[in-house]
Structures are given as C-alpha cells and as structure tokens.
Image (cartoon, rainbow, N blue to C red):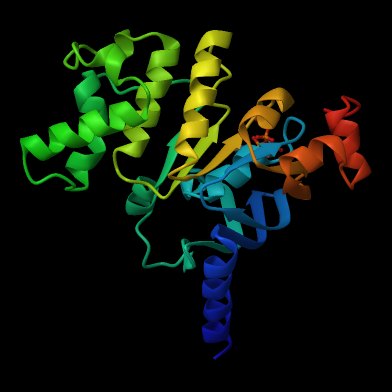
Length: 268
Ligand SMILES: Nc1ncnc2c1ncn2[C@@H]1O[C@H](COP(=O)(O)OP(=O)(O)OP(=O)(O)O)[C@@H](O)[C@H]1O
C-alpha cells in the first residue's frame, strides 16, 4: 500500500513539476568509502543541469548512478531510489543495457568506435532494432548527425573512420551516437575538457540546442561553462549535495557558505 502511494506521489510530481529524474536518499559506497551521502534531488526535463564541486566530491559518481554505469565497478554499491519518468531504474526487471540506450552518456575524452562515421551512429539503433530496413537506418543516422551538429561536416565521408575526425568533431559524433537510440536523458561527464576553445563553444551551442528535446546533465569543472550552458546547478561537496537551484541564483546569491567559498575560488 505504501509503495502504491509512493508511486502515485512520484507520478503526480512528474506531471506537475516537469521532473524527469528523481533521486531520493541516494548513498554510494566504494568498499568502505562513502562517496555519495544522502542525495535527494529532482532534475527537470528540457533543462540543462550542471553538477559542480571540488575534485573528488562525487559529481561523476552521482552522474553514473543515473544510467547504472556504477554497476560495472565491482566495489561500488548504490543505495536509495532513483526514478526516471517515475520508474525505478534499479528495479531488478530493468535491463541496464536497455536503460543506457535511454540514458545516453558522453565522456570526457571523445571515444568513437574504431568504425566508420556511419557505423558509429548506426550501432545503437542496430542492436536495439530501431530500424526495419536500410532506408530507415540511413534516416536515423542522418537525423542524429544533424542533431549532433556535425552532418554538414561529414555527409560526404560517412564511410570514413570516426577516429579520423578532429577532437571536437569526434565529441559531436559521440553525442550523435548517444542521440541515435532516442534517449530521454543525456549525461555528459566533462564533455569539453579535452577540447580547444572553438570546439568547446560548438559543443556548448549544441548542448543548448539539445535542451529543447532532452534532460541534459553535465559535470563540469568550469564555472563559466556551468553559467553559460545550464539553467539549474547542483553544488556537491565531500559527497553531499550542498545546494541545488537556479544557476543564476547559485552563482550570484548562494545560500550555503560552502557554495559561496567554491564559486569565489576559496575552496576547490
Ligand atoms: N572506480 C572507483 N573506485 C573506487 N573509488 C572511486 C572510484 N571512482 C571514484 N571513487 C571515489 O569516489 C569519490 C568521488 O569521486 P568522483 O570521481 O565521483 O568525484 P568527482 O567530483 O567527479 O571528481 P573529479 O572532479 O576529480 O572528477 C572519491 O573519493 C573517489 O576516490
């Protein structure tokens, strides 16, 4: 009975508040290391949410909880409740491979497969059976590369290797690859840290475009980047979520002294 009530509450919140991801009392342990402490947060759809905080505060760990990437780390244990569209993603009936198609991830270092540009994007739709024939697959590949803002640069060399592109192009290819499986959420772990300023600006522009369709969560060490691309910001410190709110408010008028110390450069 209490479980049903719980679900009803979550569903109502999803409808009323545009909540896409809802985390409640999340703890993460690496062996004895308590890396995430009691994190409760609601992340909205069609919004870019930035995770900021000093090195080692748990940003990437918490990000990886959202698509169960921590499952792949043997010593890692996740406790608590994380829901996407009201569905508990840690329910035993959830297949993590299917989940990761719906919760795409882009990493710090662009990591295209050693395959053609076309096959990089077609890979996910193929294994998840999203296209009935070649024409449909071509369409998904083109649409994804357009959404990744890289179509014009690669349309004449789709059979060339993805690894032959520049770093910035590779990262946009990886974003196109993540989009190809029609995700609900895009997770980005410092997606620009290996890119030069021009490529960074292109990816940031793309992130702003992606916000129209997805819930985007980005880990960043750059407060300027968080301020440029996000509408909501979460500040983590020593594994706790210290403050969460409108990005403009976090950067101009934070409530917690730890947030203020970080944004003014006194910690971190
Ligand atoms: N694979 C792992 N195995 C064991 N401990 C880990 C692992 N990944 C992270 N940790 C630990 O968890 C804590 C949080 O690390 P995490 O990488 O999530 O922080 P972060 O805020 O993303 O740091 P950074 O900004 O430096 O990337 C740290 O104490 C770290 O040592």
